Image (cartoon, rainbow, N blue to C red; front, side, top):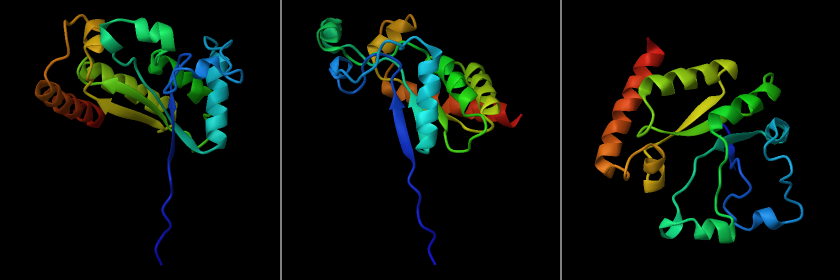
Length: 175
């Protein structure tokens, strides 16, 4: 007899007033009064846990047209907080659960292996093994400028570095 497959539900959490629908913040049922309150993210964790979700937080996307006009006019996709500041809040209220996985989108292009390995291992220990890493190499000039570069490195260099960073992180975790 074949074992039934389970579905995994992932909530893509933006820590800002907007997400994939730029006008969502305008909806009367969209609460924004508590966007800077830790309790907001604790509440989201409880709701996601009750629904057996996993969650992921992400970074800032590139800007359209080289300026912020579209963001100001339409709302854009805005993340205010670093996911590694939000996930421990969510973990705190779901410590005794087994369903809610806590993932962060973190770039191998702009983070060092030691920092990534240490931070993710810490989160994994604090969540009793429920931490996840959405590994990305980044893709936008805005991200590069946030880290003091003029632009994003070529794709082949980002992928080479990504491989090296993953190898180093695995070696650090196994040491």
